[in-house]
Length: 460
Ligand code: ZN
Image 1: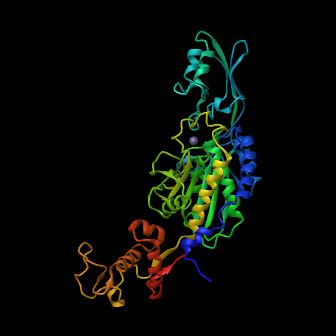
Image 2: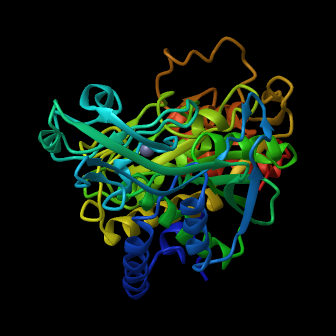
Image 3: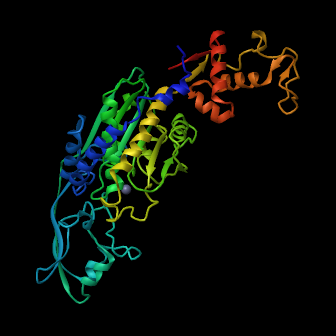
């Protein structure tokens, strides 16, 4: 029997979705998108709760309620917000803007109103996009009590500057909770990756209905497998949810070595990947390899403080490297944070293509080989082990002619030194190959030699 080296074994993977399974998954996504899309999601309230309970039907996870008023580091869990109705009507009772037609019409977390306003008084509460006149913008006011309406710039002509308008917002704030979902997949190793997403955006399909659907599909897939690593799945409102999770899970976090924020994965545009704050972490290396393995083109977005929950997970105390794979990345597509990001913008087949990328990433993480030097305190003495010339001064990397020096293979010396320097128990062979330019096949052969003389051992 021929035993394939591990990097070839990955090619005959059981993590691939077969064509039959793909069409079943696409049907499932098509069934999830329409009912989830219009729910009035926010950082708290019944829309968020209903979203998580709908996802729970696909595969089980724990729902956790964090009460209003709970201190989470420098933040406090806000009051819970729910809306019954919201509209602007003229004094004849003709509704001009109605939350019932599209929940993006109401600024998220608006306070209650039941007043008559002149147009002049009203206009500072109105939000439109003159550059995209038929789109409703998405606006929030979570931490400052305020109210407002969003609508297409084209609809501004429905208002007459000399008239008065009745504004009704039947919204309540109460001591409730924010709702989160969590599930731990325990692998052989305690080392854990976070798989997180945010579920607070109403009526927009790519940002971030696509992310929460991918989250549940990944959770379902991983729940049915035996894994080497452990995976902690987290879903909740953006920012405050991540902060609440981090403040409640200090014990778990010592085993967390990296993670992913699932966001904007269902557009027809190009795949992208936002780097971790380190840029060359195991996760970065595995993402690049996964795109290459699948022969998929992608855009690299460097780490940027604008973005999502990576700001919390990678903050100075935690420093968890987090990356995101995207398909039509947030900020980059014109429909972003508008009513144009609707169900026609995403396709189930795109979400499944993104799922395939994430499964390949997990497969490559699971298959990554990580070694640790047994002599990490300074470099081990190679010459006494017959791995380095005994004649000093002879090794000048710029001046070497030919393949050997005093009978020693120059490439092998370089490979061994690269391995011993970078094998810190965290860098994978793939990363060492990317850092040093030494092909992975040569690194892998050299690990066998170094394991035999007890200079290196595998840590996973
Ligand atoms: Zn967003």
